[in-house]
Length: 538
Image 1 (tube, rainbow, N blue to C red):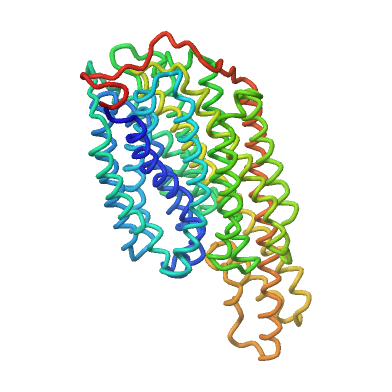
Image 2 (image 1 turned 30 degrees about the vertical axis):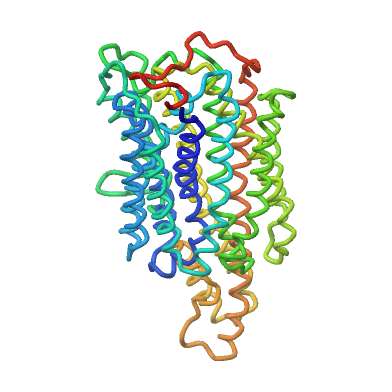
């Protein structure tokens, strides 16, 4: 008899790799800007396109597992993910890397819903607490481990290896999945809703594209008569049409079955999950750029600062499985959101051009504590009582909520950061220009403003200094330009980090609506294996 935990570890390996790649890119952004001769908007898209491609298909890929069997879909996604990782590591331009990351995100979208769906089939309801806690811990720890591992790879072997490291992990995971995962097959076929799928995909794409590129196009024309505002309105309208169709469709299986939301706890858990995805993804981009651009840390040094956060998240995730039974899952989730909000607020307060990086460690460790206290109990309350025939759909919805939050967090925080740079850096340049001779002030401000508006230059060691300056004046410019960029970047970082704090407060509001299950919940429809397979994987 094969233990279900053998299959569980295979699922954790796949899920760890998926979550790791959602944040591992952030620490390599400054290096990639230089090596690929790219601007900030393009490199932000390297991360955002992965999140987008991992988000849009989640609802349909969750149903694909219900239709073709979770093992078949997971293996297909694992192959695509591994191939795309190799392509990403070999990419020679920002455009090629963005395309490879899109394929990688699609592979992740095929795998992600199947991991949680398998848990609901492998373990009976009364025994799901521990495996779901492990699944939640993997999500939190992998997300935080991304910057740490990324820093080590960028520092010693190059940014390409943040993708190439997936090759051995992917191959090993594939072998384990083929051997250890039971091949359940559905008892009935599903009639998918292609119109609903198209509405969902187009709506999310338009919304995220509009937010991501708003500053790049100066909130104006994108092509012909189409503007950023038009794209955003179209995205909202398409998503509204998708929701209406999901409620009214009768002839085919909806991507989001209405039965899932008859339990209000599932609804509130998804809202809280989206808030956490937004906050976690949104806080990394400005924080990494601040550490490397303003404080002058290397990729390895900045990733080392994330290590306390990963360690406390792992410890908190391990404790949360026992704590939520004593103090209540809702209370623990609210405490986790509040702790993370306080931690990010402390980082905002401490951020300054002359901040000692070591003083940020307590705030980062506190952030990890908050994250670790949220994932496991939140996943538990969302999935308790999930009937097997809706396992794929529910898993798809739950993961979509986090990913939608992550995509919007990456895009919105990137937007605020670019806006902050566009306004704060020129403002600092005007202040610092008072130290220059009058005849050089206007040109100095203009060049700094141009660099800030295009978001293409973030290295103060190569300032935009006019070629015809006197040597003495040029030396003054090189000294004061560092202060200009550092002051402006600090202001932009503080502004962009306030956005995750606001969303975390909304997460607390959502968490208050959660009605936690009893310790041993009674579920009317127990999880049963299909096609003659046992729940223990035999």
